[in-house]
Image (tube, rainbow over all chains, first blue to last red):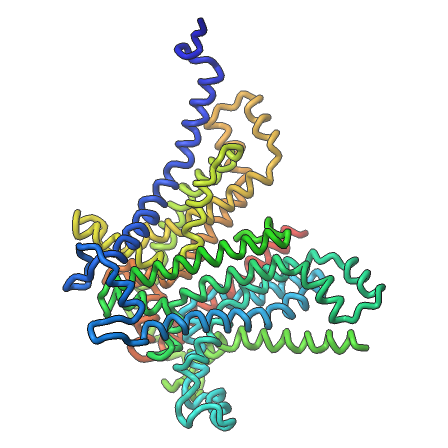
Length: 307
Length: 265
């Protein structure tokens, strides 16, 4: 007969001690996140399936009413307003992410070709504006694009905008604000990819008389792909849920999903509708993260596409 | 030849991008010294908007709120996050996937979803129990929630970078657990703790969306005050307070550059 089940052996004592150690170190933080983030998000998701009460607060019974509202079906029949907002969010995300890539790619390459002693300063110069508050940065753009400013007058004389309209509020201003806001998020991962670029591959391509374009496409671009994917995740996901920039630079016709959601919790007061929009945003986030992981893994750079 | 043209083109593009990045900030700084309250014409240099700031009690209390919020939340997040970071390291051979998911959740959740779920939760808890009235305390809770992951990950990566035999050495020298913490662990992870604290502090001061949705009527922070002022119609005082905040960031940038220089030397 063995007594190991009754009398604690050194091994089982150590296991208990380890388990207690895990509990003491991890439990406070894990509990905090569960109570103050997991529970609230779960509640929000539940709200999306409730009915809108008279004061904008959610009530029983359960229904899919909020999703119908999100798709545009209201008391007065179908209206495309919400769908336009959704499409605009998608469009703004695509355009601004594309533009950010176009600007960040050469910049990241350029920094990696400069002298090693300058590189940290150059990176810092790119990042520092994003340390200032988002509201202030956006306010700076409001000052720059308002009617009567040099930029607006220039656009006016080129016939790009109607006289005295100014460049903001407009969808263009929102795109500009998004590009401005997210540029550093793309430069940093791309720079990391360029910094450890294997130049032997480029030389091999040149030795084989590849044209510069082909050398770039086959020897450089694949090596920077993990950085590019990480950058796209870091830009596209927060851009899709952006609230501040469209609110300040977009006006009524520049609204994005984030504004639609937020409005339901303040002035609009329809929590279930707002929660339904939030669920859509969450789905987009997780689909985006999942897709990037899959693509990253297939390219063999899966380890690096971690945020 | 072709290579040099490319390099020249890239250099020009670099300076253009820098101009793009700094133009909006430069405009704010410039117009904070404008004598008139026009946002389009610069007339004369004056400090009148800065004098106005000193007399504006709302701004001063918003500043105080921002500081209290940032310091208290960073301290709490430092303690809780540091514990998780150590736990993750010590038990890294176990299956802790659920913990990783939990820690990444605040990072990947869109700000707006984070903010409104906290707000909805606090409002309902307050309605049912009377606790957690929206105000500074709810803001602190929300900020700690998004700071914990960053602290935990910084502390964890510092531990991973250490030589594992150091822990054995400390044990072999019969150091008690408390002595091991005070004389070995805390001193070794001190750089990680300092950078985690400053990152938490910066994240807190920089945050607008989550603060905005969890704030009460009396607990406006600087970004919330500025937001309100912009929405009400632009007052040139915003340029002055924004310039001061940009100045603080510039100082932080120079300090961080000096630190990284010293580390290299």
